[in-house]
Image 1 (cartoon, one colour):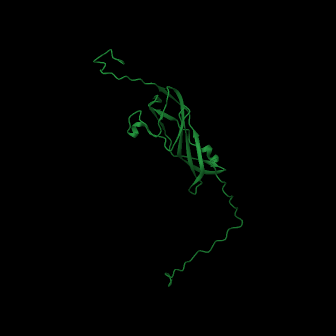
Image 2 (cartoon, rainbow, N blue to C red):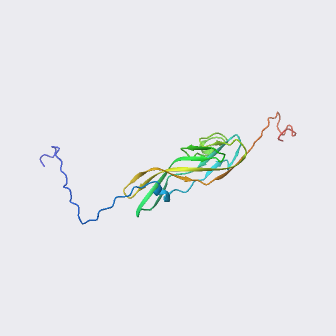
Image 3 (cartoon, rainbow, N blue to C red):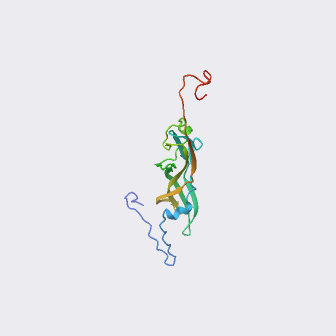
Length: 187
């Protein structure tokens, strides 16, 4: 070519379609309701320490959820679904709840002392036994073999309840240790 740098481009001629080839039906729109059968397993929330707390002090809650992938068939078409946690709705069992964007971490992982506030902790006002749970909200993407594409909305899994026992704690200030005065309060 003598004019290779003239900015003239060559394009391949369009190939005619075979009129006898069957036409592919359009893919149906996939909704979150369609993906409910692929939903991740419910997540159990754990109150720290050991599902026990003290009235008037923070009880730390942790719900561990992660990205989840499942394969199967939808509308007769094989697909892969990937769920990613997007929100956590904690229900503490005392009539209060909180919406968080994290499932929380243990006090140890946070480098905090027990009974200190965290983004997922809750303070119970009275002693008693409470049934707490967490609902995890997920966004979803599907792959039909052509790459991932998002599905509008969120899917929520309702977690099972955990029994949280809240006790009262009473303290007394004393001038001496039990060794110094064995008859002191609390000795």
